[in-house]
Length: 332
Image (cartoon, rainbow, N blue to C red):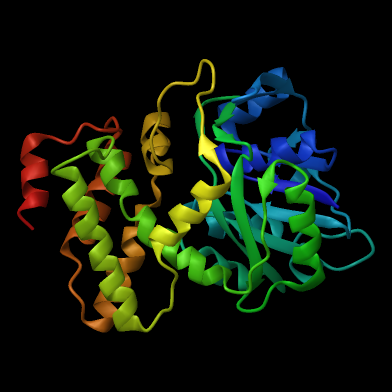
């Protein structure tokens, strides 16, 4: 199989790099300065074992790709970019007839729970992936991944149900041979909802900085409690986020990567790179929407969603929350 990584950022770039190092056929899809750097200098990929330059083929979009029947599309863009990516790739022709949406599997290697729903409108075969992968992408052409002895846990399953069959098993085997733990799990969406609860603090980390001690720790517990109450009211089953942390900790630990600056969550990284957008609408916003549908108040998630979007829109630096803004959050 050839793996086409749509969104070669922290997560997609790490998966693509590790698959490439594992001997698999990989094509990265990137844009802007990151695309230019990958074309000119290759991918500078740093792990606890060291930093190396990988010359992985890269394109800017589907226009430069002749799709083959054995291709796997792995979607790793942020959720706010998913609809555009699906519109670009689903109608592309595949050698031998048909389109990507009709013939190729799409793996959603993304935070949140909206991507699979969007993908199923355009692709017949959708696989969900719950990603636990400590990685950073702060400058064009450079990605670091601090997990060891494996880079991450990539739990894979079918969507809307099932274990994904032979296709998921084959992809999982390739990942397991490329420095990942990759279990196939028919309950993958329960894990993704658990990850959603854990990701509700991303917006707080992005606007206020690293969450250590009080009062930020208390705010994180409160934002997670709002999310858990909403999922209970909506009747949505999920695993315990603490079990997810424990299981990940049993197979990997984070180690320093030489020359890599200290970083934060994926939302923090979006602000640091000045992308102009952030995934809060599909993390905190998912809880806000469900809360409105089921009559559960979510004031803290709503406030963080609004703040994170304002930071991204106006180009504010990560961690620059003022004392007055923090006081307003604490008063909710």
